[in-house]
Image (cartoon, rainbow, N blue to C red; front, side, top):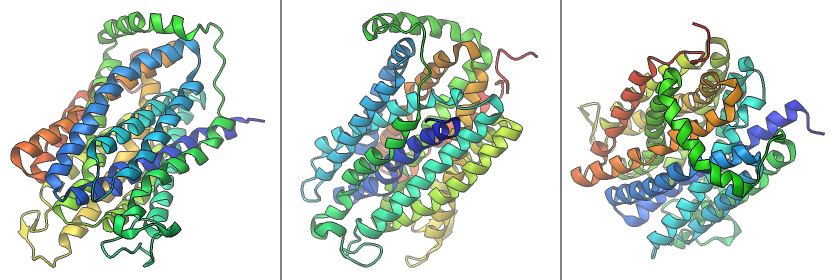
Length: 445
């Protein structure tokens, strides 16, 4: 029997199951591995930026239309199953990134398929949030779910570092060879992070599909009929949006700061590998610290959200993330915040560890609070449509941060300079948040 508590826990398990794509593939293991086998951090950051930017364009075009179709058919669970298959297939394909012949086109295609699956699935699981509790409970539920996802990222990262990913000497963090007879010389331990991520997702999505039930939709129509109505309905919603001032400003604000945050997560590992010369193993240790910090502070942020509302949480996190983005530019192997350091100094590493902890803490809290802010901004009678617009806002410009990083990096031939567009996006997002009403347009003044 599916109880309300079990349904919430089933929803939590999506965050647990899907987090390794962000933790292992986009940030701490696979991205720096690609930088190492390309032997050029600037080139890797450029290729990574263009690849993720292209996937972002597809996400922007597909998310709102798919969301509208699912809204009319009431079939979100079957869409989540389809996107889960894409997640598994795409992440498994990263096994073929051989160090002697990385086959960049195949690798980026596989990564893009998996990324599309993860992002589309996230869109539909987020739309289930309003049905999990009251308005007062949503903040705590959202924050706890995101914190649970961070813990999943920590556990998966520890397992990979201890038993799979090898250092330049061919040893895992425990000092042994990769498990299952994987060949360290061919980097099979590190490449196995792709299949590991696929298997992890397949196993831990079982509670989600067993315990989460979508409310029946009385006026559901066929998929073909919904597809015909999707574009006209979406156009109508977009035309009406500027008249909902608070919702409109929140969507634009979140569109920019979520894009900047994704850029920070995506390029953190590549930046550390290229600028500080960190190995995949060292980047992984950095990831464990950031994820643990993120889990603790996202859980606390969820409780602060329930008590004070999501807007103060979002504003505080944006200030922190803006300062972190500025600080990253001033950390290199040669200097830390303008102070020259020797080649053997650990100060750059310590500084980046601290910044990583702040990224994890503020990044998780702001994403969890943004989900609950969307619930408050939406008309309760049209909550699913509102989450469709939230998906559109989140994906419509999801290519700006990675593409701007790629362009600036290529133009300046500097990874540090390539990070500067994130500062601009965070600050604009903070400014646009000011007119947003904590209870939305529909609240009584």
